[in-house]
Amino acid sequence: MGRGPGAFLDGFAPARNEDMWSNAVYRKMFARSRPGACVATYSAAGVVRHGLSNAGFDVEKIPGFGRKKEMLRASRPGNWQPAARRNDEVIIIGAGLAGQYCAEALSRRNLPYRLID
Image 1 (cartoon, rainbow, N blue to C red):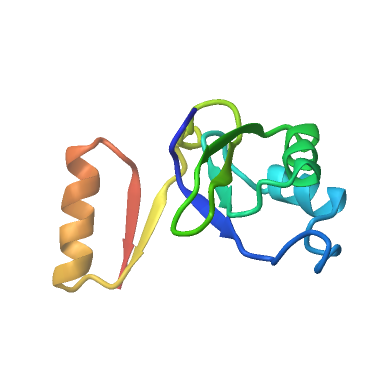
Image 2: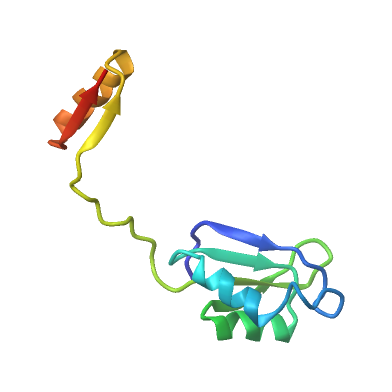
């Protein structure tokens, strides 16, 4: 199971806070998560496990913390990959020391730039 960036769900028990544990919430979480992102919750309720799984997460029960015997960890399948780099020109505004440093760094990487002062 991937251990990428993640979030912790703390919405009390599903019986006490039904809106937090809805399928719509799980689907939105999945849609806004990058591959490899993790979610953890102290809730080990079957309805939570099934909801996360149905949304597309890989879900597993893990040992709990403190007085909790078990908890859930879910991750979005896949490994995070950076977005493809575009070869657009970089605009540097300001030709002071910082601007010159940026221009030099871009030149070393053969990246096009325009320096505006």
